[in-house]
Length: 413
Image (cartoon, rainbow, N blue to C red; front, side, top):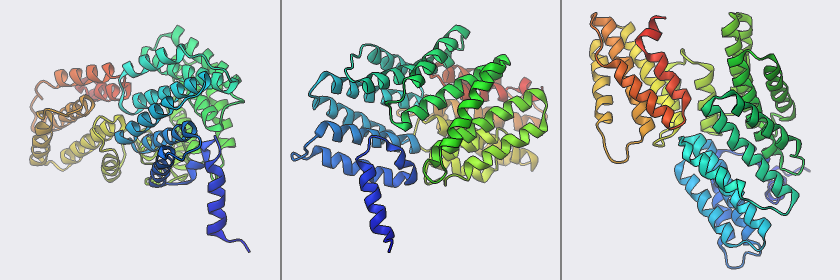
């Protein structure tokens, strides 16, 4: 007779010994945190037979928890575990592996909170590595390619994008020795790079490359085994299809893109991976997300300085401003403005990205009140320009784009 609880525990015990952490996609963010804490305790025991392996695994687990929740403390736990692993190295290859893990943490910190300096530091570290094992060399090449792709996307120069694409191609070609999760991250990054460049330049070859990568990921990632990887691929495909449909004025293609987003959402629940859920919500509904969903997204991304948190807050403020305008409620707009203004005057731990989101929110409120009262909103262009500049300095083009959309001229257009 199949004893579900006992056999499931055996499966997870076996998975815990594997280098491939894809099984983590089957458990909630809270359980990932418990696994990370358990691994950290085990690695720190005096009796631990392989402390380097234990700390490396603890770092990877904390990193995954941070990726799903945006918890800065989990990212700090990952960095501390990677540092402990570096203190327990016994050969040059382990030293290189610990440095690669540290680079992965820098990369995630940039993805979550911005700051191009983190990319520069990580690139500098990974370029000086000397690995012995082929698998470690492949991991170093994969990290270097992913870091280069992010820098290239920030700069937007054609030559840099082509160089980054070539690095991703080479890393993918040499990914046989890597865990499936690392290869999937490489393929997602290559698809995102090709999709962005393909849409911007109307390049059919790059769009075809992105389509092939995303189709491969969706077909390989079973919803019963790799739901989060499948959801990310579906959401990226949906976003690309909607962008192309907008350029071509093709409503049928836009409808297909929305169906892909719906399929992505069906793969998991908000508590399973809060940031994945918020990311899909914000991408699939650029202007018409329900206010209740936006409020939930903001509640799930309260970590100060979090990119998705800033985007969710700006979108929620914009939606509330439109609702108050539709109801002709000037008092509601004034009340919201007072709350945002108090936040803008806060000092101390106030994060620049949160400040930028509130600046854009203030512009939404001022423009809505101006349309209701027939008066010209004051200093809107200045506050949006400052918000846009801050977002660009931190390497967050998505928030800078929201500032552009909030410009009164853009609204009229």
